[in-house]
Length: 412
Image 1 (tube, helix red, strand yellow):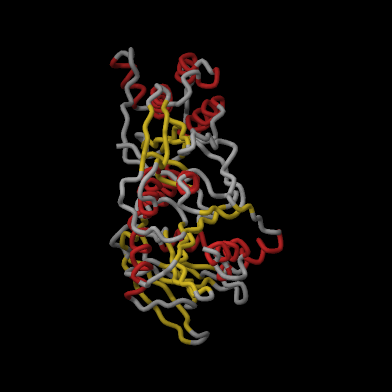
Image 2 (spheres, rainbow, N blue to C red; image 1 turned 180 degrees about the vertical axis):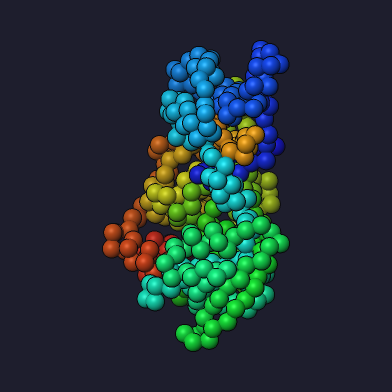
């Protein structure tokens, strides 16, 4: 079954037929043994699913003949031809990904990867690769790796000139294999640790209880709508309810979107009744998603958004705004009103195709328009720089948008 996306991240478990209609057995066999296989797979999927039947005035039948009339000595040349054909459609969300890109982004949307559970950064003062935190219940926590521990070597390779991305690539690997880290703690204690890689569930939700004046506020930051986001959101709301919070702040700033059904599931945790979103495909198929009386809380709620809150974030924020369930604070959102399906191709590459448009409960089409917050409050360049350089200030009184959210909640 295809996964439906409302954002920049992707994931899929689908397979597609590679045989082109009307081809002789010998021609089909030749196609399967050449890079044209993937070229024709892409053509067929777009032909069958793309939301615009006119393909932006591109003669898509003629495009197939053009693509298959060429020889592709390498996969890279075939990939370039695919990308060039898709660019003609003019939809930035219908895109081809080579196997490496597809694997990386699939891991993001599944919310899992094979590793040892360490979040890292280059420390600004020491310039040393440093543990930010070990992920809960991971090999790193079981080995007593702690925030602030420095990673000096990975499998004998010195990390001094590595980027975080390069170090992450070395630490990730096949489940069940081992990685050896040389580490330092407290600036002096040097020790080695051998960790066995496992499948790690990445945190998409972070939350904390905040005492704001005389009000107990549950602050929840949703990073992305992964396949685990809804269950993590449920745990966060339940835990904060048990902690006797009196209100919530849901932070969707910087959230690029993700899975459509994750946004619907999460909306249902906040809304008791009402429409969440409506999607329309190229055949006029009209589907509505609504709340189903399974809300986990009816406490006052403020949602923070910015210009990087996109797609699934906009579905959630739009549903909460249109239903009157929440006050929206921040900048106008990104404005992406399209839904994609994702396909795994025969060589491990992937294709993302726009298959429908979505509309908010009010009927608004937010594509290229975004959602206007109830309270528009941008950040100055200086404020943005301060929060970016010191993320610990996000969701505190030093964060103007969060501070405005607390002001709204205090008046209720």
